[in-house]
Image 1 (cartoon, one colour):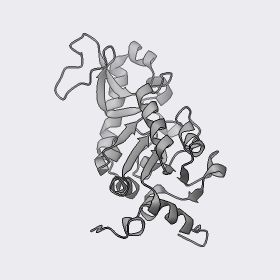
Image 2 (tube, one colour; image 1 turned 120 degrees about the vertical axis):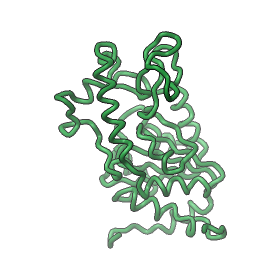
Image 3 (cartoon, helix red, strand yellow; image 1 turned 45 degrees about the vertical axis):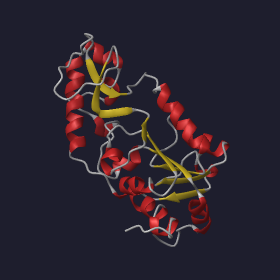
Length: 248
């Protein structure tokens, strides 16, 4: 922290009285753990770009190649650990009567850190599902479902719609929340980027945590510049938000 640290007194007043909290996280939260984005110049793999492989068309054309890329990515995910931001969010579940974590990330690091009520808007790279019936593949099952359909990574590919149920759950969570956080996301990829705007429309107090300003910054009740791994433990410190509880 430095001289630019904002006055958090009003935030703490809100947080102490809040009973329903929702958090919306993006790639920046995982990037702090060393998770690559697999996009842009750094996303090249065997001369392929993510945009060329993460599509239904690529899977239909060459499922083996797509699976090889995802196996490579899963190997990277397996070596990455949750950071202090993930851990602060996991602890925060005990600070509010209702707590919902909405994420655009597919790495499962929130669950690994201990979060239980997680809405995954883009799926989870650690799972497979049948491309025909949607059955999730159990460990040890063949790569062809009992229905005859092929298994694919359980993630949302370019050109695919986000799961309707997940989006509905996310909007319900922010519609009833007193306090909403948006962390590590540019709020530019729609329809997910609409979530913090909807939170404001429904009257929630919204906190933005991001290293750089975003299109949502002017609307945030509190906007802090910096990594979520630094700010979330401070903003969600049980000793400050719930000083009446034994937080040992």
